Image 1 (cartoon, rainbow, N blue to C red):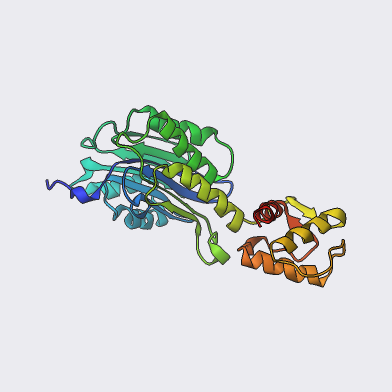
Image 2: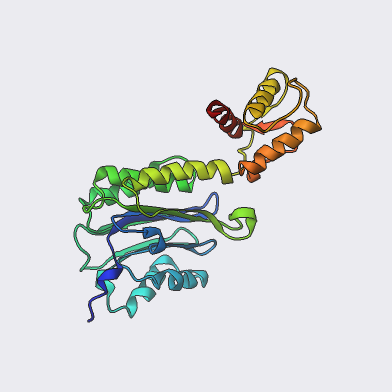
Length: 296
């Protein structure tokens, strides 16, 4: 058997997961490897998610998703991918299918510590880790964390790093979440796609980016708005004036002028998904405006 190309060696820890309530599939990964997000995570809405690592066979991504789309289970796809792969004992793979079925595989020739855990709606795995507790932390945190799939996957990475992590250190991390029409404008399924290619604290940086991503690209949470009236409206106009987003009389009148200036603010600051035509403003947007006005 030919030994896999060392240039494809991706020692890391990752987790693939499924959120049946919101119809989301995703992968989160961290590694002492440059740009790990370009190799490990693969996912497609309605099909499932795959992480391929160790002596990384990137063909497992598109091939596996195609098989998942045909209705094969995670375990069946794993069997198909590994059957004719001469380097399978060097591979590490995690799969979650369309229904939340899961499978994880760690070849006998993966460098220690290496292993994985799979359960309902998730599969996690890692190699060249400090300890097995790293993978256990991935599983436990995913099962117990609050929030949406993105929150749970990133929380799992953070817990795994705290528990031990990659024995070689830290360099890059990535998060990929897909859902039907979840991409910008609803034109594709790429709901969240964040990568930290080279950073001394890649998971912490990924957490920071996710927070920003949610602010700019998530839609307003139901009920998370405040009516612009009275003193509140006066304060908003003052903040907009200070940041260059308003010209006019500072009063408590909500008219076409303030509507136009608010629209300019929304579009300039990239709050496309949170634009409102009524007399209400998203509380998170208002918090952003407040912080922005303090910087001026």
